[in-house]
Image (cartoon, rainbow over all chains, first blue to last red):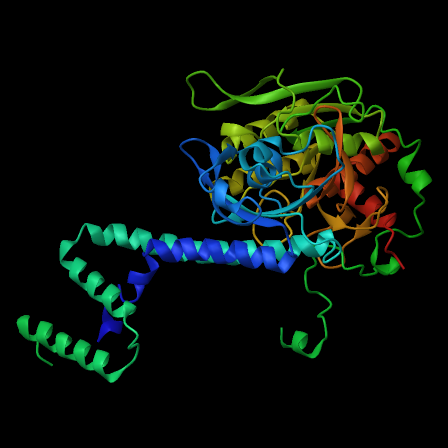
Length: 215
Length: 276
């Protein structure tokens, strides 16, 4: 049975589209919850010590994916550096806060709430820009965004674990057909249909027979 | 906690931000009400040495004001370790300047020193943070403000040892709590004073938390704070609650120079605004 195979189910987990969709749906959800002009996710690029926009929803979303900002600048930088959730309301200074982000995105927010994405240490930041006024007070806003960030981080840790397993399996070529098979089955609409079950059972018996281990 | 399903909040459920819970005066180790006059003296914090471990401080900002000794952590030549050296770069990030301005607002005459431990390559370097904290203890500061924490398990024991050393050595560490139930340091250690946020718009308003690990709540919501370049912003977060307690501790130490962390905790609880 497929549930005896240790890699069962993770064809989907190592699928890069799942990762992208997880980030996209989180920024969309964050923007909607806060009624915000925009929401974005930065992930840290250790090689360049920069925060990179990985997903965005709302104002400027089409132009900022892949843009880098210094890892210690702006509210995103503070949150990344300290591991603390924070909010900022700009007071209309002549020199706007977070200029590096503004220059990168062409969008200058007046209010930001940002929460760290933490695995062992911060790996990135979830941020909402210009939330709907008076929808939440800052304390509530920070609690909600922290919860969304923790939810995302927990999901990302599973993806990371799946990729670790994938790397281990990459070194074992005989596993590779099983992964491909699982991926193929995961794309079918059949789900738990008898046809899939019969196919897998037959395959299971075939393999067992080839190993001289017919049960 | 099944009781939550019935709309009953267990009394001892930890609170990570102020829920406005009252605390009975009989629960505080003070035989009679403490007055702020007795606790704070003239309120200047004069003569008290405060160290800000953060992203650096812009000493030219009028809200920070006054002389400020600036240091940074740097890699020691060849040894792979870290050392603390004078810093001329100020604060490129802004977080430390905000914290310093909050301390200064409450304790305008305290002596302030900045050690830059955040920014660029220093982030996440637990050993850099340890080097800075060790240096601060060697220097014998009265208070160390840490509006930051680390979750890295490799550095937990070393930071706990330094927190204990500070507790017994007369240096009080004031640390921003995390607003989630995670194990990060140093705020979780009982040797330090851990601070979460309330939203009452009064920088001198302090609450003692009946449900730790967060021990006190100070103003951490919509705080007016300085930024490099002679700017000001409104900030929210426990990072900005901790400096309020640092400022209050500086006031107390000006009036009561011999107090360490245990006495400061007792005095802060004794003057808390949520006592009934």
